[in-house]
Image (cartoon, rainbow, N blue to C red; front, side):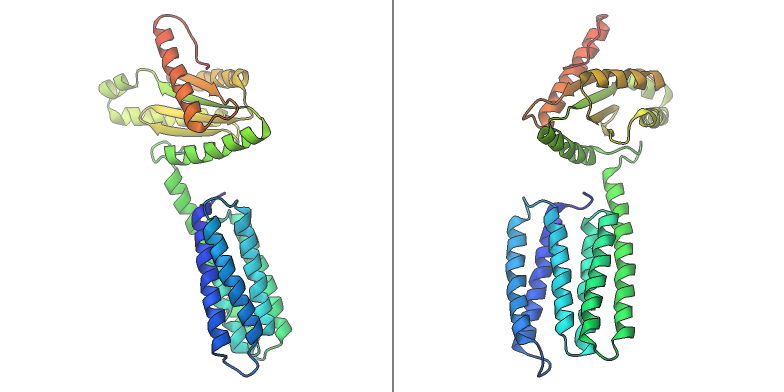
Length: 315
């Protein structure tokens, strides 16, 4: 998932809470004799309970809860639009549409965010048209266009920020934070399904000598070149990251020790500089930190073995 689950549920809890307050205010101080006070009171209660539940579950609820909560808010807004008695009341729900679109664009992948925004626009517009208020079309169209434009802008901005936050600026591969987050997700999936997953830690041989003799710019160029060469040999599902310095790491879902060894041989053939690697295939119940420790141990075991004329890289 693109967005952070905790922040997404926290923002949704805030949105539900604000909606509850506004509905309660509308019920206490009706703007017109035909104001649906009973409905507003019920929606205030639903919003308050929803806000409390989302806040309570923000650390452990799956991302499906975000999708469901956004969809429910769209439906409740459509219901309120249907029961609105004036065009002003209907158009006043426009900011809710905008908030839904912005939140979806912030926490969901682009396709899912666009789908949520489109669904919200569709059901709220249907509810508004069913109310048959006079003078709604032009103002309602403005709200729809505003929602579409701001949702798309949020999707693009959030995507750019996530890419920048998760990318190593020198090599263009995942940085340590992004690699660990995605690898932990892949590992959890592997533990649930029983599929193999192997982690490989790659460390350049003699990199300090390159920096000392040719300068840091040459060392940087070598790192960029190797990252590009490795990336060309990897599958779309493989995740390459840079831990720091001249140390890289691979997360290989659906890959056992034998297939990992074959992949590393292909990477060596494609590489313009020598490197050592240590690998570890996930064991039942093992977390990412433990896998990385075993891969590191295997890496330094291989470095020692190479110095003594032997070769081993698998744990």
